[in-house]
Every structure is written in structure tokens, then in C-alpha cells.
Amino acid sequence: MNMFKIIFVIVTICLFFSACTQKKNSVGFEPGNEPKIIEFDYNYFDDCLSYEDSVGNYYNNNKLIVGNYYSSNYLNEAHILLKNISLPDTISALESEVIIKLQKTGNYNFADISTATLKFGRLLQNWKENEATWLNATDTTYWSGASGFSESDYELLEINNIAVVDDSIYLEIPNELLLDWVENDSTNFGLTIFSEQDDSFLELLSAEAESVFLTFSYSIAEADTVIEYNESFTSDTFIVSTDEVFQRFNGELKLSNIQPIKMFMQFNISDSVFINLENSGIHNSDDYRRMTINQAELILSPVEESDYPLDGSINVTPYLVLKDSLDLEDSSTPLLTGEDYEYFYDGTSSDSLSTDQLKINLKYIIQFITSGERDNNGIMIKSINENRDFLNINFADVNYSDVEKRPKLKILYTPPYLDE
Image (cartoon, rainbow, N blue to C red):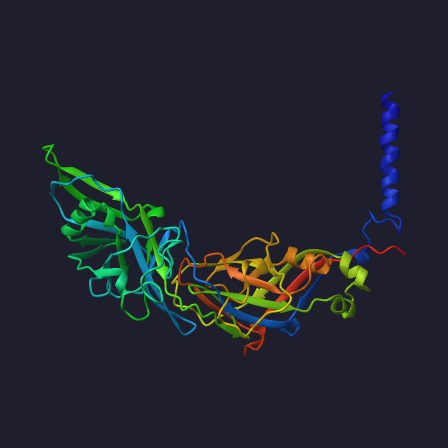
């Protein structure tokens, strides 16, 4: 019985290898069926542009941004909002200064962090951390200004002192402010931090990063002891100005997190392009449809270094555009909405800000295009950190002076096995 099994296995293996050497067997690998690589240069890109999108709320952000930063000739103004509703029920007397402790990251360009560079205001309206934007305090209420958040939404507040020790910033706020928050909790809307300096920014860690604290000592009449209070703020976020005019930048390739700027690109990789390429292994439209995309990379070269952030990374995600026509003239709405593009499992492509080339994975997008399952309406590329920080980066476009830096599309593919 065992001998019969051994003979059966040997015969099966022999038949398999015999089949793999047959010229017309699709399981075997022929020399002409090996993967090929093609690099499409800037001449194969039909349309390239960038466009502004809506400013939104970045919930659960581990950063807070304050300052003013010019992007695409527009002033992006960032205000921090802080609120703590988890305060003692009563305070008979304060036994120490009232301190807000903040922690800065390495990304800032303030020459001096002081009452001269930072301004403060007591907020006059309620807001919600996961809903507040420049236009809205909550999903159902607006800030009082005609164009969004304005001076009428806060009262200027004099801070007693600002001290900086290593990465920590200590703000001494008036005792009266804290006592009023405790006694009138229904009007405890917190405070705002902003700057009036040009081209200035300061990046802080947020409460989500356990880095925003309110600290003081107090006593109550019922107890003859001093109580220490050191708690994280219950709500913190930052809001960024927007003019709700969504510019188009034709021929330019740029990304921005605030105000969000996305890129749109369209390239010509039709069946005729592959068929006409020498030794492509693609002889007709059916070959084109059946070929396997092993790897596809869009290669972009950063130019014109941005001074923000001072360090960090680029993290982008590509999407396949579903909309077959674009209105490049109407700037009252963003060029594309969420219904106009689709995610195709290509994930996030990342690199450092000092990179010479950003390589964006397009494998699945290209496969869906070449297979005919989706139309080639172009791709949209966005930063995954929109509304989070002041990242602003420009890439060489198809007309950039240095030809080597212009966009490229590199595709590694395997032609289908052709029976003869």
C-alpha cells in the first residue's frame, strides 16, 4: 500500500513538471512573460493642478497651533481654545498662583515667548472641541463675527506672567478669572490664545498628549487643609481662519494642511500608449486589460523649502477621481467633494521633509484603471494631516525648470501569458 502511494506521488510530480515545460501551458513561465518596468515622464501628464478645500475640525489632535502663517498669499490665523469644566465646586481662598502649564514642540519660530508675542482672551460663547471651526462654535451655533471668529467672541485678558523653562511654558492667569469660572460655571467658556505677530507660529502639545494642565492650591471653609489641584484641561483645540474662497492653482503642485490644499493629476496610460511602446509585451487592448500591475509609483520632487514645520514628515494618500469633468472656474465650492473620489487600498505614502523624492504608491489605482473596472479620471492626493498643522510644501510641476525634478510615473507590470 505504501509503495503504491509513493509511485502515485512520483508520477504526479513528473506530470506537473512535464506540463510546465509545455509551450502552451499557462502554468509555466516563459521568458516573454517576465515583469517589465516602464517610466512615464512628464509628457504623459495631461492635467496637474492644486486646489483649496474646506477648513475643518481636527478632533483628537495631539497638537495645538497658535500664530499667523502665509500660505498661497493667504494669511492663516490660528487661535487656541482652552476650557476646563472639571473645577472644584467651591473655593474659599486661593493659596497660590493659578498656572496654566503648556509644552511646546520643536516647531516654532517665536524669537521670544512672552506677553509681547502671545495674547489672551476670555471666551464669551460656548464651544465644543470636536465641532469648533473658524465659522462654527458648535454644529448648531456660529461665532458672532460676520466672517467667523472675531474680537467680539472674547474679552482681552491680561496675563500676569509667562515663564519658559526648557520645553514648558507657564502662564500665570488672574485669580479672579478662576474664581469666576468656579462661581459662575454656566459662563465658563474658557479662554483663547493668539498672536498678532506676522509670520509667527508656535506648536504645542495638547491635552490628548497629556500636556495641558491647570495648577493651583486652594482651601475651603469646611477643612483646615490646603488642597492641591493639578488637572488636565477637559477641552482644547485650535481654529484657523478661512475666507471660504477655494482657489485653484492651475499647473501647480502643492500640498497644505492649513488652509487644506489638495493636488489633482491626470496621466495618459491608455492601452494605445502601452501597445505603441517598444517591447512592452502589450499587443492589443485585451493584453492591456489582463496585465498585472506589480508596482506603481508616482514620483514627485519637493522644491522651495518650507519654513514650517522645522522638522517632520510628509504623509499623503492618493484617491481615484470618479467625477469625469471638473469646474475650474467656480471658486465658491471646493473642486472635489468626498463623493467625487474613491479610496483604493494604496495606503499612506510617507517620507521626511528633507527627501529629494516623494514616492506615492498607486498600484491598486493603476490596476483598476488598466483592467477597465474604473475610468481614468485622474487622481487626487491629500495630506493625512489636514487641519492639523501648518505644513506647506511645493513640488516640481510639468513645466519646472529642472527637467529631472518633473513628475514621473513608474510602473512595474507583467504582461499576460499569450497562448500560441
